[in-house]
Length: 410
Length: 224
Ligand SMILES: Nc1ncnc2c1ncn2[C@@H]1O[C@H](COP(=O)(O)OP(=O)(O)OP(=O)(O)O)[C@@H](O)[C@H]1O
Ligand SMILES: [Mg+2]
Image (cartoon, rainbow over all chains, first blue to last red; front, side):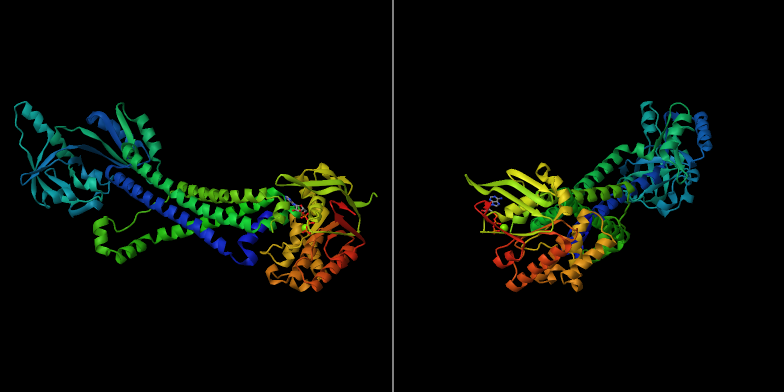
């Protein structure tokens, strides 16, 4: 073992014990790493959960066309989709905006029409139902999102009126089309404020009637087999699908939203790095004090033939070792806390506002968490480098000490 | 005198104190033969430590030549001198300067560690030296658990670890009571003789000085 490393170890662990300085400095880095890991994981968890939700409501890939997709084109598309081995299931959809009216109260939700039998294989619709049943669906019924239903004051079985833009068209031609009376067959809840506040689901047939689409559809939702590479499949589909059709991943169709999520995450990540920097600075100040305290010993190392750069290496190594130990412990503590995060959240809830209130106000009972390997690698590299650099300033000071002057400093 | 271990010729050293130059060494000529012991005395501030530092290659003279084993050390940079110092000479100081985090044996071994690896031969030599200075049983004690005299013995063992040709000792008894000081000086002279290591001993104590083969007195920047 080179002597600078030996001496660094001995100064951190004098005669087998752990020095107080080692404990404090390691704890600083450890806490920084723990907090950084937890915050990024929970932030990532929210983003990941929203991503999952988008996939659950529109599939991995959406096929859309510039024009409406008619029977002939639909046949072409379905042939391509069926021939793609990575695709688990797909189903056509038509979407738009309608006006709903109940007891003279109008709302303007977006509406999605699809064949429930086919769409069930693409989207986990059953999972979202909180009242009524998918099996109850026919061409004269709709399913409302939960907040929408609450706002309208309707329950399953109630009748509501649906007005479509087609009626405006007809009025221009001096024809009148009566609103469609439909039955509320069920209520669903996705767990996302915006989606839950104004979405209506209906059968593809009803949607085609409301929009005068005849047999045409707007596009297809596609679900991939687990492990399939979304981007690759989308790219492949782009090439094989008929002209004028696009295959976009859920990420692309929500690019703007994803950009915001990513920005928030990066911002938090950036702010969190300062915690580690502060911890690194505490290492710097402690090591600087050690250099001052050990001035004469450092002079002696020079008198014994130790090179200035090896003296510097000794202090840098201390920074590196503290950083590595702190990072390792920080990751361990971070993953441990993440594993038991729900217990911790529940404990905090119980101790503060009470479990029930907490769930009501914060909309979640379980804290999401999603740890990305890239983030972990970044945290590790960053904190180890920061700690090593923290040792660099004291190291430089130590290396600059001339043995004669150091020894004379009685 | 070809077998001089160390030789200094016309060494001058000035210090600037305020706007006055302080001529500490004014052409010192000095040489030590292999295995010889020499004592240096002089008033406080006469430049004994300054000379020792220059001999050790820790400091540079303003003028003059220095030879280590007939090698022109004054032509080497401080870095090059540092690289050779650990093998060529050992130093003992008034304040011991042991490393507090490691035990006595490890402190002795530190000299070898700085030169390179530490293996079984180094370990047995360190143990032997500790035994020789009368601390064979105390190898695993930390410096803070040892008395001043014991610490200085360890410093002596450490200085001898790499079988240097020369030991430079700067007032090694300055922090010790009279009896302990006498013991340390006797020990130092004995082991240097056994190891055939030359010794330059800076001391204020005439009795200690008398024990060396040659006595020098530094006055007004020159030996008299
Ligand atoms: N770096 C320096 N700058 C200015 N003056 C210095 C410096 N180093 C030493 N001196 C001066 O040089 C002179 C000789 O100092 P030195 O330490 O060599 O004396 P000494 O003979 O060892 O004294 P002592 O017996 O007290 O140890 C002193 O007057 C001291 O003040
Ligand atoms: Mg002195």
